[in-house]
Length: 151
Image 1 (cartoon, helix red, strand yellow):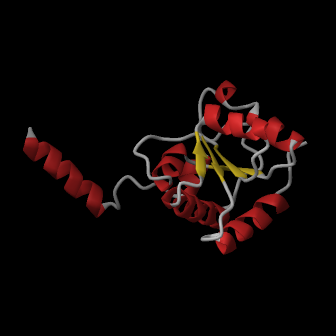
Image 2 (cartoon, one colour):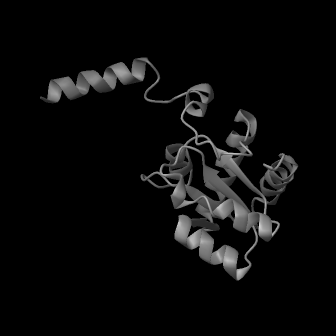
Image 3 (cartoon, one colour):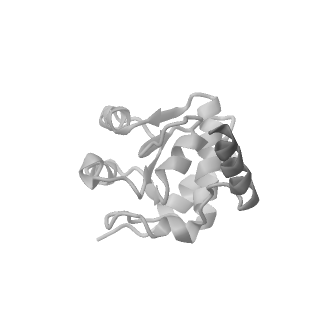
């Protein structure tokens, strides 16, 4: 039994693990996942989430993000485009638009969760501004704000 598991892990390492390319991840996104971040912007958002998670400057999960949007907290909302069912979080983009908060979809909830330092997939994260990663945050804020909003 253990030999089989070891062989599987060796094969995964040779093929690059279970990492999927951006194009493979885009295939699984929801129809409401607009505006979708580009590959480059997705990487920037993951890095910003990582920095914010180290300083405990993120809000993670639908319930927590929704609560702090209602309270008027500012930040960038990052939603995972492959979350099913979409009813779980389809109200969040509308809340963000009502409060003029920038938001963007990224292709993978697994990658979003791991960049936040969690082993569990996460469907939504709010990145709060902080002095330590101000440059990265401002760059992400500018690019996310420039994305075209869905009609």
